[in-house]
Structure formats: structure tokens, C-alpha cells
Length: 87
Image (cartoon, rainbow, N blue to C red; front, top):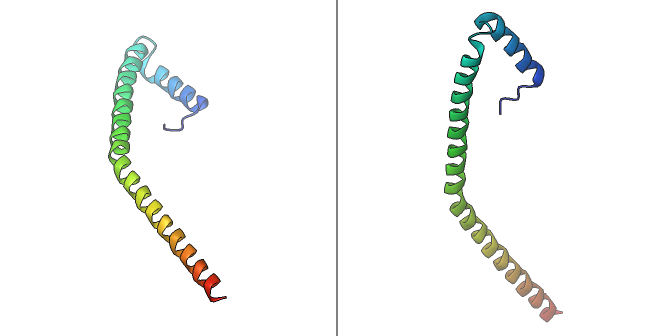
């Protein structure tokens, strides 16, 4: 999600270890983990809501495009028939 690799996490862990200390590090990691989980769930909910809201307009656009394509095919066939009749 944030494109953080192993070495970046390792350096962050070492900095936290020096700043916070080994006795408070598990409590802080739990706190950050809890909030990160809440944030991740929120983003997934927003993403799902956007996808649900865009399904119907997308389907309608696809129907319109299919109708236009079938109309164009019908017109092309009529043009071909007219050309054949003239020959």
C-alpha cells in the first residue's frame, strides 16, 4: 500500500527501538498495528463503495456502446447492399 520494503521497515524498527526502548516497543507496535488495521479497513470500504456505485453506470455505458455498434453494423450492411444493387 505504501510501497515500503524490508530494509525501510528494518530501519524504522531500529529507530523506534532506540527512541522508545525495548520495554515500550511492543505496546507501541500494537497501537500502530490497530490503527493501521482500522485505516486499511476504511480504505477497503471506500474502494468497495466506489466499485458498487460505478457498476450500474458502467453497465449502461456498455449497453449504449453495444447498441451503437449494432446500429453501425446494420448501416454498413445497408451501404454494402446499396453498392451491390448499383453494380
